[in-house]
Image (cartoon, rainbow, N blue to C red):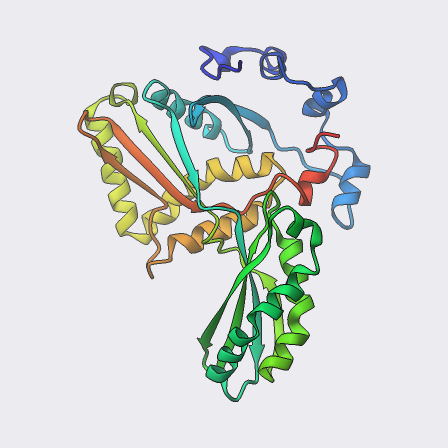
Length: 331
C-alpha cells in the first residue's frame, strides 16, 4: 500500500525518490527511464508542427496527500520553485484531519453551434426543440464507440445571444465525453449536424466548437487544515482575511487565483492534459456572478482549524489528446 506521508521526502536523492514512488508499481525499465530522459525528438515532431527541439519542465511529486481516504503522490510539472513544496505542506496540515475530500458533477462538455442571419430567432429556437431527437441522433452517429460506452449527446440547449448587430441563435450540445476531455468528439458532432441546423433554422452556421467553460464538469474539493501546523490562530485568521480580500477585489483575486492555478496547472501538464483549456475555464468560472472572484473559500470551524473548499471546472481526460503519446500512456 502506498503511504504518501513520508518524513523528509525532500531530503532524499532523486534516485531514492524514484525508487520510493515506483516501488510496487508495475513499470517497465523503459517507462522509468522516461522520467529522466523525457521525450524523443521523433515524438515531439509527431505531436506539434515545425519542431526544432524541446524544452524541459521539472517533474516532481507532491507528498502527504490523502484523497478520499487513499494515500497518493501527486505528479506536478512546473518551472516555479515552492509550488510543489507548498502543496506538500498544505497536504501535511490536512493529513491527520482526514485529508482532501472530492466530488465531481460528471463528465459533461458543451459544444456550441453559432447560427446567424435568422429573421425569426424565437421561432427558430422553437423549431430546434421540435427536432431535438433528430439532432441528437445525427450527432451520436458520429461516435458510436462513445455512445456504446454510455456517452454521447444527452440533451441540447438553445440560447439567444443579443449582439450589437443581431440576435444570434447558439445551440449547445450537451455531451457526456466519459474518460476523454472530449474536444475532438464534440467538435466532430457539431460540424456534422450543422447542415441540419441550417435547414431547420434557415440561418447560416459559423462557429461549431467546444466551449472551455465546462460548467457541467465541475470538481469540488474540501480539506480541514490544522491551525497548529499552519502556525497558529493569528496566521489562520490572516489566511481567511486574505481570501475575503480576494473575493471582494479583482486585483487581489487575479493573483490569488494564479496561486490556485499554480497547483492545478502543474498537475494538468504532468498528466498530458490541456493547460490552456483548464485555465480558461477556471477564470471564466471565477467570473460567473458578473464579477471576478476567488476560486476558493476559506473559513474557520468550531475547533479553530482552517477549512478550505475549491470549486472549478475540470475538463481533463485519461484517454485521447497528448495522453495517448508513448511518453504519457501505458502500452
